[in-house]
Image (cartoon, rainbow, N blue to C red):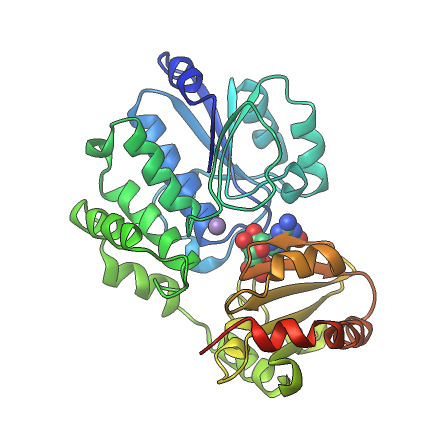
Length: 342
Ligand code: 5GP
Ligand code: MN
């Protein structure tokens, strides 16, 4: 755990400040829950807080309280830049390095004259002035709760903040089942329910809001599944044409990789998704046990993340990406066969 400049940050925030809060590119439930939750908290403390995210987030997160006031840097560029230029400090939530916001926004942030404060649970964080980093914690939303707790402000958590933070903890823990979920997580979740998070409603909003197309896309993904028992590995592919056929919308492939990991005996799973717009193959990796997909993705696929959940990219065709992946596996045979005991 790294806690840096916290007392100075507290002093800085004694006066009402103009704050911008940023999440990573392709924001997920944790990024949106954390940025919106922190925004409500900062507003309650008398600050002016604006959430700016690099690009659009999935439809199943649009119901989040405060969502209507966020700026997307790519298509609300002038409002986003205006907010950034007017701010006295920027909070970076749920990401560890400036490049995670995407090229254009990164360039803007690199010119930012004031200080950054990071709250994040990814490995190898960039060094910024104020930092709360803990790779042991399941979600940035749990860290925002603990940040509020460090400020002795748990009483300020209302139904909106509770709803936002609950959502991110829920999505980043796979509904409280990944091994990062601790008794502390459950205690925090209990407190968030007491403070007004409607758990049943939140689960429904996020997980039971599928379009028919999304289910058909899942069906396609599952029929593309390949299993490599010798490496306890399974992977899924999706081509651009398959995405089009089932009316792909942002967020539709979220969680699909977990189906590969749900197979008995599989401890390493991947999904390779063709993205012709960005001319790359976007990859998600998941694992069980000690096999670090963060290291694997860093080393071979220009990515990173956590030990058991990471992302990466491949420049080339879908076919080339999976061929490359399959060629890598033999050198991990021992590791893959010994990293997890069911
Ligand atoms: P996902 O597979 O859901 O996109 O991402 C899994 C985890 O890895 C998330 O915590 C995400 O922030 C991180 N991640 C995804 N893509 C990248 C990447 O390209 N680089 C790094 N450093 N982390 C990533
Ligand atoms: Mn997260």
